[in-house]
Image 1 (tube, rainbow, N blue to C red):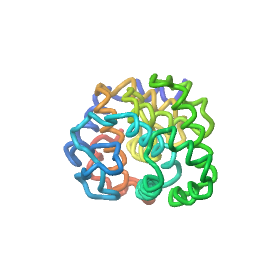
Image 2 (image 1 turned 180 degrees about the vertical axis):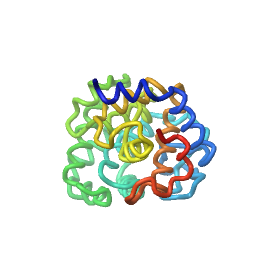
Image 3 (image 1 turned 30 degrees about the horizontal axis):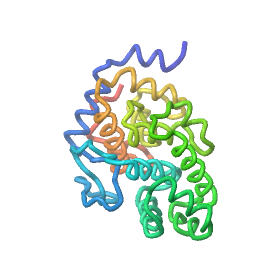
Image 4 (image 1 turned 90 degrees about the horizontal axis):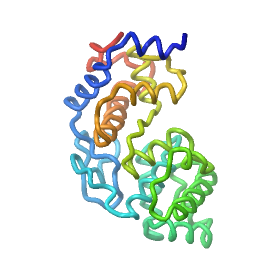
Length: 246
């Protein structure tokens, strides 16, 4: 019998929702995805604090903000948000964030582009990924892509695809990251090595929130993860969610 099915039957649907409620009560609304140049703030004040917009779900407000979120989703692979913020800040000095301008910059000033995104790491690789996603974005001509279509873009894996769909396109896709695995494996809902799609299904089958709550849930998991699951032994300091251990 598949492990995840056993766990699904042994846990209440309510717990996934109660954990969300507890995290929200603890950390408040997070206002993700942060937008460069927007004069907002992060209520919890850990990590980057600029560009957040708690309780304002109108973002992205235009195609440039939408593509900025998509770029941020790619750049944040294997690095922290403050590093991505530096990279995006550097890029913003070279051009605005339309996909066409980014692609033109990449084609005409490759070295300058790579130096701009260097703070986010793996800059040669991410340079190519950003070109790929810019070409893909332009080809969509304003349409919302399917998850399968996003995953077909070279350089886009499960986590990045869900980030793009959830935050740039406001689609109900649960984004699973390292903190999700650390927190919920510590609580006993699955093994930390459980497959991405099984974990994603666990949340999407059991969480009753709308797309705004999906965005908040991911952001709250990250905030809680930074506080209690940054270093091993993961969860040793977690007094907030201890009551939900199974």
